[in-house]
Image 1: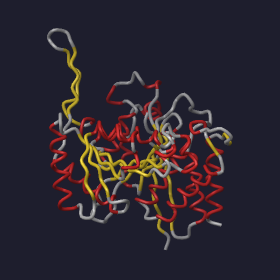
Image 2: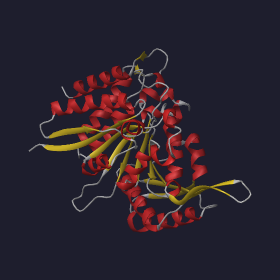
Image 3: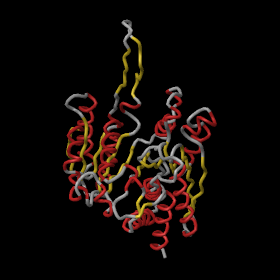
Image 4: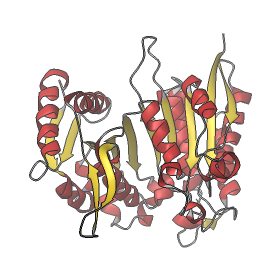
Length: 371
């Protein structure tokens, strides 16, 4: 019998709709080829596009669809057009609401350097060739969600801004367990990054990760590293890492740094996963690491690889379709090996293409691989 997977597509703003259109082409291809799995998609507004049409960055109806979906595929939100909207209805509030209400606490951000792009990195080839690391970011706690979060005016007329960093034992333990589970499927090594030298949340993080490793980390090496030292080591010797687990704030920063090691932030996907329910199903959202890039929106210049690779992660983690996920990875590598390059990864003597042309090159590789 065929399995039907319900996918909610949220293209968003800027280049989001352009890169999501290439994902839809890949979805259609798999629908035409597979006899055992089928994808049904629905598309909704999110971010600035939703503010313009509906007055809010995401509606309750869209949230209900997200809860009911096998997976959510998210494009990008935001841009200068919405800089002056109230803080609580800014485009990015949609993303935070999805993460919080779906309890997507585990954010997987791979940093993989495809062989054809080793020269595109800002580091020398020998430092990035063969790079394959995974940054695991806690996504629903920490500085971005802690209360109080406010700007207040003091009696002397000055203003004071407060962002509160809060973590509980449970939040740290569950992300650490995910890190150890992932490492067992990779190279059996985890670095836990925090700032225990100056932050109480770092002290607790260090303690809980250490205790969790004793119970759930069999067969996995655990190394503790200060977050700032980790940032330095990522550009000094990135291939020493396998899985890096860190809190929300440090994970945001370190994963963007790691992304640039690969040649372009437009290359990298991400997965945000929740805890499995009683049926074993986990809510999940998949999105490219890059932003909405309003400066090139609507020009057909955007790199769709990160969004297509995000769909590949959805196949792997939400649809139990590892073979098809591997095919997408191989098709991306094949298109790059043939010299196809969007502007963000352009190199001398390569073929400059736009969004749709890169999508077509990846589809052609998929067809070749499945012929």
